[in-house]
Amino acid sequence: EVQLQASGGGLVQAGGSLRLSCAASGSTFDDYAIAWFRQTPGKDLEGISAITTSDMMVWSRDPLKGRSTVSIDAAKTTVYLRMINLRPEDTAVYYCAAETTIGRDPAITAATMFRVPNAIGSWGKGTQVTVSS
Image 1: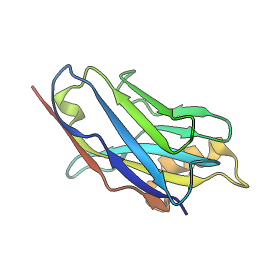
Image 2 (image 1 turned 90 degrees about the horizontal axis):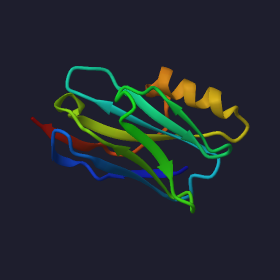
Image 3 (image 1 turned 90 degrees about the vertical axis):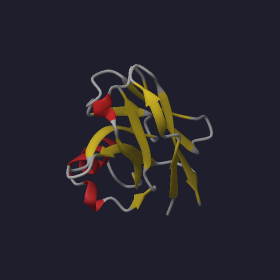
């Protein structure tokens, strides 16, 4: 099972940008759905985007309203979440998570990850993003 390490968070001024990374260890992201979530204190996890590597499709919940882009490196070892024009309300802990898509429909896997995030088996530790006004 793949292990995940999220990084790239930090303090940024409103209007700035960040690129978060989710690095795989133990295996590559071949045949995985990798999703980004965020959470603020007292609120549920919020799905952002997912990428499924068997078909290289992106599935977006788009809470940042077009200000985020998910991508993966050619080696399929790191998934990125690029966020631009950040706002104070984007302040949250950001997490990446992964589920295998072997024997499963990638679209259904991604949708299920967003619908039932607590059932996801592999999570990276969160990375804090703080946007100052």
